Length: 420
Ligand SMILES: Cc1cc2nc3c(=O)[nH]c(=O)nc-3n(C[C@H](O)[C@H](O)[C@H](O)COP(=O)(O)OP(=O)(O)OC[C@H]3O[C@@H](n4cnc5c(N)ncnc54)[C@H](O)[C@@H]3O)c2cc1C
Image: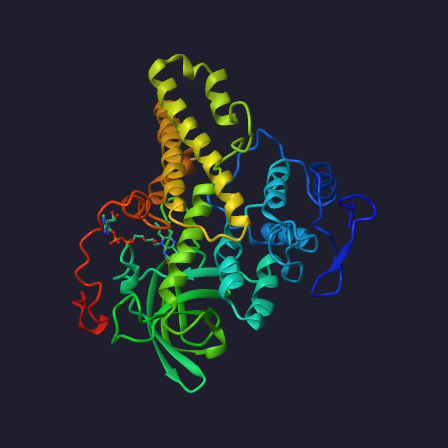
């Protein structure tokens, strides 16, 4: 390892493979810099970042990056060292994340579901043998996960999921279809919500499974997006046998796990900085600096729109940093993730649409700067739950406003009207 945190006498701990991992005690940012500097190249501050992986699915680059970081536990510092983390506390994880912003970070979009959603849920609810099997391959990038929640009849109303899971001895037999499955084209595992008991209310009869995407009966069909993404899919599941050992959480506990997973997803989307130069804690981000130096901000209307995007972005950064401390202290993300997602999406769209306007007639050409952001922007208000649904969550769970009428809340799923 390239540096010794906490000085030369800092204790070392062993990870599951027996290799030495630095103790997480009292790392300074200089020590983190020394360690990361030996593994990664410095970031070019003017370089543009990726847009949620849009148009680029460089699996190999992401895997190389994760492999380089896994032994030090730098990518998922709060995870246990034996699973590819370094047992860091919240403040150290935030420090590592901040320092990481100075380095050239690969596009980790393909690995996002595993690292940000499945991993935390497995740490909270997975059995020890499941944690042993799945966490390290997530941390080192050797196994990619996708999220199989949405169905043709269950999007915003996800509790309506109809994928059937019927018990057969020590196995479950799954039948149904999922849609809008990002990363389905290359995922090895799918975190899949399925109905194990149709005789109870829709929220109560659901269970979570890990589906091996290479299993017989799993058919993945591609859906190409307007921004060029080709990993987007629909997944048909026909008599797929899933061992009970691959059930995540208790029977009937799928809805609770879904809510928790979505809260992680919204906190992650809300916490993302999109594009180059957004990570600076002070000063103007590079995109705003670019508009200033090219004279665009001399126009008061442009200035107002640009500063609105910047304020949304900066307020979100601060709120997310506060939430990250709470998360690292062992709390599960809650409805504040919906607020973060709304703000970050609004900031992203404001910036993408203004950038397109500023390009003038040239902006009609594909390949011009900001075109990918422009094409990706509409989807931001849908993925991870729509803006309308986030506002409902904030209204009901944060502001305490009266809930929407939910006439089917207590009826048995089997008695509900279905579209087919
Ligand atoms: C780019 C992208 C990636 C995605 N990736 C995944 C993935 O990896 N895994 C996965 O499982 N899903 C994924 N999704 C699916 C996504 O979560 C759903 O599209 C989303 O939750 C909306 O569901 P729906 O498309 O069925 O729309 P619907 O639920 O049918 O909604 C249609 C419209 O009605 C509105 N509406 C619905 N209910 C209410 C309400 N109660 N109050 C107010 N308005 C309401 C919605 O806001 C929307 O405008 C992805 C979607 C996109 C666009």
